[in-house]
Length: 77
Image (cartoon, rainbow, N blue to C red; front, side):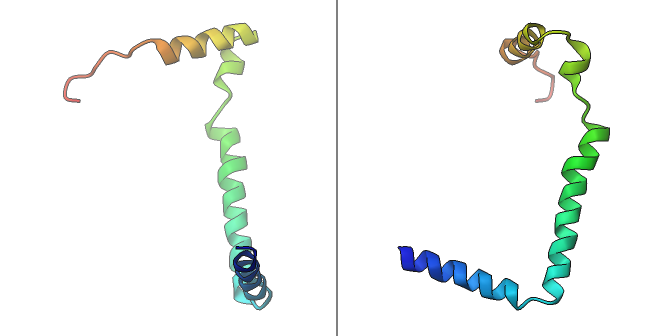
C-alpha cells in the first residue's frame, strides 16, 4: 500500500515538474477559483443572518425555525 502511494505521488511530482504550459493553465484555474469563491461571495452572497438579527440566539432561533417548519407544497410538484 505504501509503495503504491509513493508511486502515485512520484508520478504527479514528476509530471508537474516537467510542465511548461500546464503551470500557466494551473495558475489560470487557481485564479478562476479564487474569483469564484472569494470575490463573488462578497457581492452576491451577503451575510443575511448578520444583517437581519442582532444576537446569536436570534440567529439560531431563525435557523431552527426555517429548518423545522414544513414548507407548503406547490401545485405541480
